[in-house]
Image (cartoon, rainbow over all chains, first blue to last red; front, side):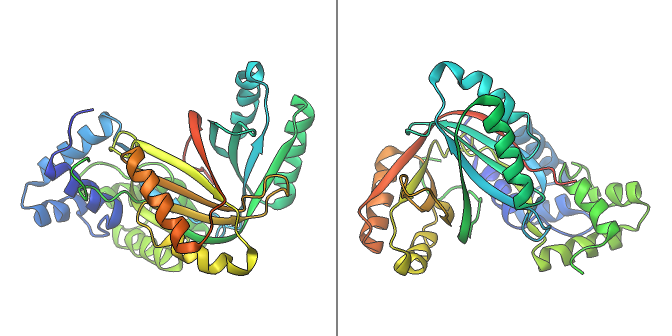
Length: 156
Length: 155
């Protein structure tokens, strides 16, 4: 990874925290950083091309859209993980799926239109793959803030 | 009403990418046949109502330097869950903190996602959380491999 410059970090912080809602958002960022709009566009393009920025868009609040989400965990024999993951990942509502170092070694998130729909999908996967899935829906959310403040430490 | 049909069309577009050009909202507005001012106004309203949780860039945190990412499960007594949750949430390095309905045999019902740049720092944060909440039964559950990571496409 190329080391990020001070300017890159400033741009990343603004893009994450306060993407302007004005006619020319990139020009507004440029004015704040005292550079040209073209330079901002160019820097962002590079940050996207090298994969540091995944996406610039909206993150929706699934609950407010009426959706239900849950974290699922299961124990899958090592030699079956690839096949099991393929089936799970194929599900549209599965957004994250990780192998983790725990007795339950496969963890995925499922976001769908209702709790009933989640139960049905989980049951189908269990039957198709002969695995036992533990669904762990949130009872309370204390924080969701996926925001990475850049430049707080020298390491970044 | 939290959102209407036009908002839904806007959500569909914003789930993808905001164009990287001088007047991105104008471009999006043209696709929907509404004015630039109208789309900006509607995005603001959805943000204020919390339908849009966050508006802007999502980073690949590993590539951005946050190389140590751990899920930590905490065995919390329900009577102190709120107090513990707010202490955990107060840490900058904690991105998610949820109390979950977990199977008894698992038991770690409070989940935190911690992102930082060194193992040493991770250990420090966990120790601080443990000291602050008084919870000493916890489990660090690390990612071995990412098999899927996408943004949810609702519509």
